[in-house]
Length: 152
Figure (tube, rainbow, N blue to C red):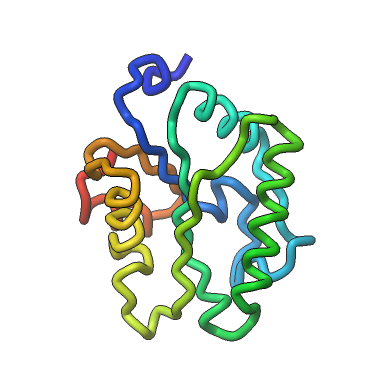
């Protein structure tokens, strides 16, 4: 078993979306639910975290909305599809809250990763400090983000 799951020390799990929950399709990202394919065992992993009592949230940049490629309703449709796929893999797999930054890089939004805005908001919402979170991401951008915080 994973040591984090056994110790029970981290109450909030923060997951990046593209490349972690679903296969990364490259720019401009998933703009239709037909492109959304879970990474192997994503649902099982999230279900296991939920059974161990963790809160699981999604932290994702979705500049495709800011660029006008899709709107917020289409993004919601993609996320509902994600929830369905996760449940099909494991009945306990669920995301407690989704934080999505929908602006473009040019807007210098404090919520767009690698800025820490979404993580800090999640910490406030779940009443935990960044030190009590585990962030799972797949890129160097995530490393830069975590250097700005005290996340594991």
